[in-house]
Each structure stands twice: as C-alpha cells, then as structure tokens.
Image (cartoon, rainbow, N blue to C red; front, side, top):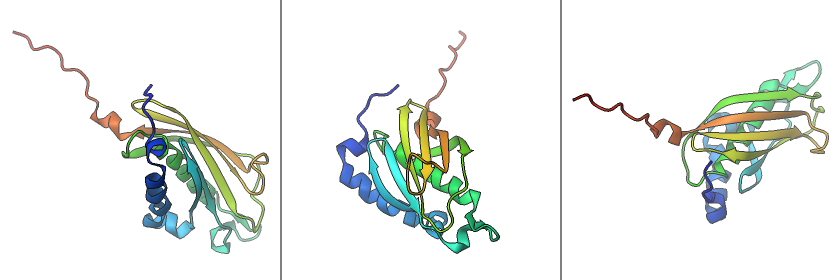
Length: 162
C-alpha cells in the first residue's frame, strides 16, 4: 500500500478548481447536471438535481436507475482522484450497488463516496446515495478502480539463456 500524501492534501485549491470544472467538461455529466458540492482528502460529495427528463418510469416519477448509477460511479471516481498522490487516469473495474428504496419523487439526489484504501494498482471505494438524510440511504455501493500506474508496471523479464 502506498502512503504518499494525496494531491488534495498538498494542493486543495488546485484539486477543487480541476474537479469543480471537470464534470462540466464531460458531456454525459453535464447533461445529467452533476454538481460537485464538496470534497476532501479521499472523499467527494456530488448532487443531481431532480428533473422530469431524468425519470425512468413516467407513471411513478422515480428517477431512472442509470441516473443513480452514474451519480454513484462519478462520486466514487471523485473520491479516488482526491486520494491520489498525483493526477492519473483511472477506470471503474467493479461497481456493486445495493438499491435500498426508491428515491422520493421531486427531490434532489446526493452521493458521498470515500476512497478507503489505495494500493499501487487498485483504489477501493464505498459510497452512499441519499436525498434528505444520509442515514436514510436510497442506495449504498462498493467499487474498485484501476489506477493507470498499474498499466505501467511490467512483469520482470526472464533471464536470458547463454
């Protein structure tokens, strides 16, 4: 496990500036209206405002499950970025979501994620999605992310035969 200080701990204003505008640069995130509300060393908090065009079932008015999945995945990614010692590419390896109850119609949705372990190759994250109260979650999740540093690690070459 690496014990390097996170970039967020060294340069919090730079990280806030980068990630505050990061989601506006991604068409999918911009279309969903993802907002960065807060972040710290190894964690992030995002919001998706309730909008009728994000509803999955017009008869019930409940937000589409893909909207919730995107929110959670994005919050988890933000938490990883806030834990890394320097900027690098990451990719979601695994995202498991437990849907606990339907989101309340007309209310904004929040996700807070924490990167609780960082190795040379993998970041481990947990998150909770909620509306009014984080103690009454709509969903919880665990995720793993591959670090780009993992792709630069090469297996040792076998010794050459004489």
